Image (cartoon, rainbow, N blue to C red; front, top):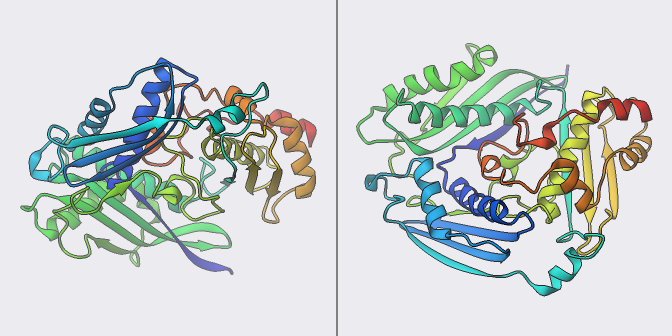
Length: 379
């Protein structure tokens, strides 16, 4: 019996890095809403009393960056001056330049080239019905639950910042139980640690993870004993610093590029979505129970320089044969990916918290399983 523990983490929408991701993607959405062919690489920094938005944009539209940043921060829940970071009085510095013409000439060719070089990964497995690893999927669900019980006033003393870390015990590659649950939840100074722990376990942990808990599960809720100062005043946030949270929680591989603030001409984002789409359809087609896809590109060139299928020994066909099928079935150029997944829409702010994968929402076209019949036919 092969037994091991694997740990993944997620963060709430009020975590400083996630604030930055959401601001970047909210700006991107407004650009695409006005001009769907907008190109953007937007980086956001948040710290005490300050938001800095920088990067490069090419668009026919106009965006009030400061207003969008403040609206996003307010929606997250930073609407009270006592939090040390408030939408109504935060300063916003904008340092946005025009996209480099050297990039433009490669992206705007007749056969649209990739907006940058890079390697992207997608992953799927049979651990959950969403075909995601349980450790990261459940971490996202608990982080989202923390925000939910704060906003619906079930736990009104909670504040926006928070983190979740789950250690899952696997036996023979399948998740069986939660070994450890770690929750860090920002709160007002009046709530006692004992009440906080009791409420978090009852209203956040058990509704999500009940069947995976047992008498041996260990709980750590605000392990230092206090989490009053949080958000940007406690820790500066930056776009793209939660790339493992955004993807598969440490399962599989990661090419290093972040997603938020980037329009889909940048393969860091669009090819990562396509790689997930391919992996998910392969697993759904029962051609493998685990699948990792790697796509790699060079700036200005449309076709990927490499396509790799790795089924971790679970494939019903050789990985090299699956690779040939993938090349035949799926569009892999930037233009083909954008068209097939319908990516020129203002859908990106919703991706910027609680994971880009594993949520079967109408906007998340890369979560569709509509290529299964075609894969089976070629196989």
